[in-house]
Amino acid sequence: MPDLILFDFDGTLADTAPDLAAAANLQRTARGLPPLPYEQLRPVASQGARGLLRVALDLRPEDMEYPDVRDQFLKDYAAGMDQQSELFAGVDALLGQIEDAGMRWGIVTNKVAWLAEPLIASLGLKAAVVVCGDTTPHAKPHPLPLLHAARELGTDPARCVYIGDDLRDIQAGKAAGMPTVAAAWGYCGDAEPVTTWQADAVADTPLAVWPALQRLASAS
Image (cartoon, rainbow, N blue to C red; front, side, top):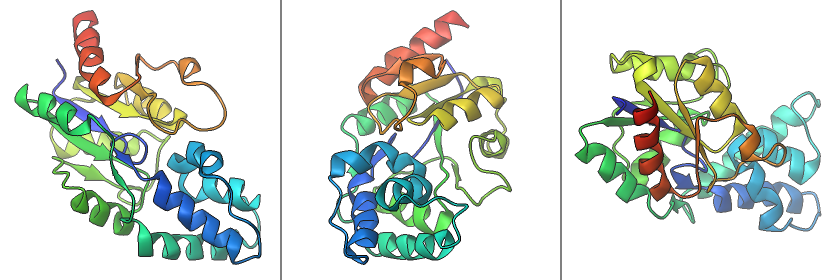
């Protein structure tokens, strides 16, 4: 079995989409637009402001007004980010299995620290390492955040597994030399299907991760 299991946060460990979608819809109502259905915003929740503002307002990072709108979105999100967010069903049991097997686990997220760390704490998660979007000079899909997490715990990247619900999670894991598991229960984006990401394994639920880890270990 691997020594260290690393997880993405939004859409993998925690179902944060309801609060993210609410903040995105606040940007619409401020402009006199009707709220979008939650189902339309959920798939891009793992993409943060970049994805949510694209869907909610057809706004992209290269647009002149994007920085101001993003800052307001983040302010609104911070004010209500713990209203509906919760761990996905089965996450507690999965983390228990990992710990009972003597392995450590951590979080590598593109969420910036001032948003990620309070929410992680409020959900009762006690990771061995937390790497946020502003911990290193690069965010995922760059491998540096994953390599930083492994280095912090003195672990060979090849002895880690990275689990995430977005294509860039799988890209980052592969670039870091880590086996990857696609979290198909998460948000998974609005483009390529999970089965096309070339992850080493796909898990439909958090409880399906443990058998996937066992299969990866037996195949190595």
